[in-house]
Length: 391
Image 1 (cartoon, rainbow, N blue to C red):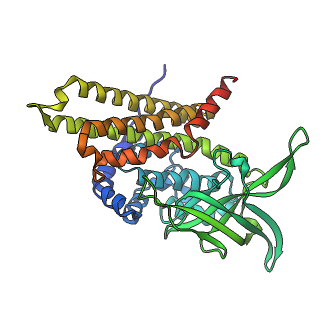
Image 2: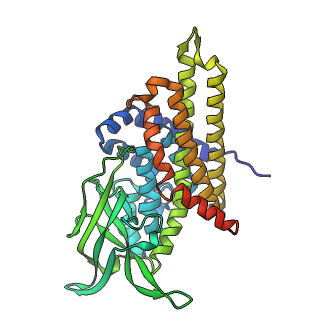
Image 3: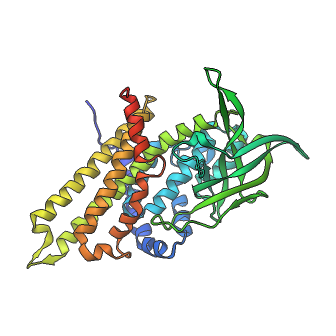
């Protein structure tokens, strides 16, 4: 029989991160959101707590946990501050995880310890002006040339919407680039896409001015440019020509993490609404005594619960080594929509106060929309699900 109850170890982790989120993250979330400032002090404490090392082995400075442990942490952080949660999500599943999964032993020893400790961050350079949902449209190029110290990759191109790419502690960005031309099974040409590690500070590599976003204001997001950027041949991450396939795998796993974040956001809206409904009075009674408010919050709780079950299921399939692509797509879509719908309803419960930027529900309202876009739009998830149905 299926059991969705958390083990004592998982529950202890979840409770610990919940306490940290409430006591450390929440009190400064509004300040960083208003100032559009990166919460370095919070990230440092998350590193000390071991959150960035949750799914990595102890030999690389990790905590020896698994991806579900990371998802539980993201849910609790997402309740109070999506910007902090996405910094962790991108730093681990998109920044460090590709190094762990496809890196050489030397690359792992070089990069992973600082990433797992939260002392450094890494970005995932996939999206381009004409290559978002259609990542196969990548135009950034990398050609192998002879250099002073041996063969070097020379990169030219640009990337957009790259998280953790321009902080003071960003260590590198892993970049997808066209490294040649291959052939499909039918003999037609196809782009050979590989992934290359580009350290911060490399000449020609520039994080452009940060975006002025609608939400996630305390997370770091930049467009990137590459002009004759030279890195050693050894900076190739994984097998040449497998970059596109590897990134798709990373995105499948990342969608479980985003679903956990979205679930946390949806639950955060419920928690805020319940508290407010018990405090706010109208027409001589607390608004929580009115059935219209009760039913609205009840639907919000149902959405959060459904999203949680969806990401639990996808994570369980992944950890068991079973196919999980479609279930990750379902979880990501359901959780993103739950977060957006709950943010809208929470704003309605709060009334005018919900329309004030300083309120937590207003922040969720602005933050949650990207959950229906980033790491695969809702339409992409629907496409994946439909394909699984044979359509």
